[in-house]
Amino acid sequence: MLIGEYEHSLDAKGRLIMPAKFREDLGEKFIITKGLDGCLFVFSSTEWTKFEEKLATLPISNKDARAFTRFFFAGAMDCELDKQGRFLISSNLREFAGLTKDVKIIGMNSRVEIWSKEKWTECDENISADDIAEKMEMLGI
Image 1: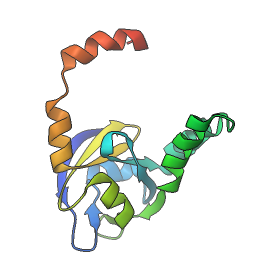
Image 2 (image 1 turned 45 degrees about the vertical axis):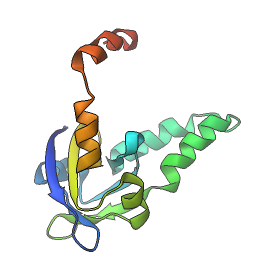
Image 3 (image 1 turned 90 degrees about the vertical axis):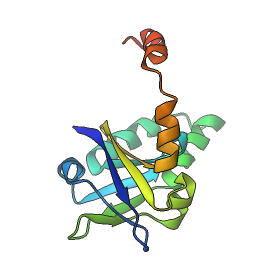
Image 4 (image 1 turned 120 degrees about the vertical axis):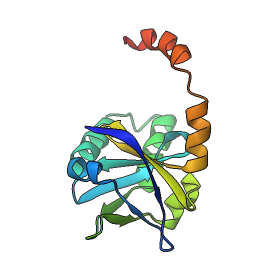
C-alpha cells in the first residue's frame, strides 16, 4: 500500500529519488503521467493496466471522454529506477506540475502523486476533513 508524505529535491537533470517505501509496490519500472489538481500521477505497471482498462470503456463518441483519455495517455511515460533509486521526469511533465526543486511525494494507496512543494502546501492547507466528510456520504463512505 502506498501511503505517506515525503519531501525530496529534483536534481539538475530533472531526476527525483523515489522513496524506498514506495519502490517495492511500484517496481523497478512504472508509469508517470499528468495528474489531476496540478500534480503528476505515478502508477505501477499493474495499476496502470487497470487504469488503461477503465479508460478503454469510455465511449469514443463522447468528446469529454476523448479529452480525458488524451490527457492521461499523451503525457504518460515509462520510467525506470537507476541504482540510486532515481528516475527522470520529462521536461513537459515537470513544466505541467510546476516542478522546479522541492517536491512532495504523496502515497495515495494505489498510486503516487508528485507535487511541487508550493502547490502541495496550498492544496493541503485547503483540505478540511470536516467539509469533505459531509460530502463523502454521497459517495457511499
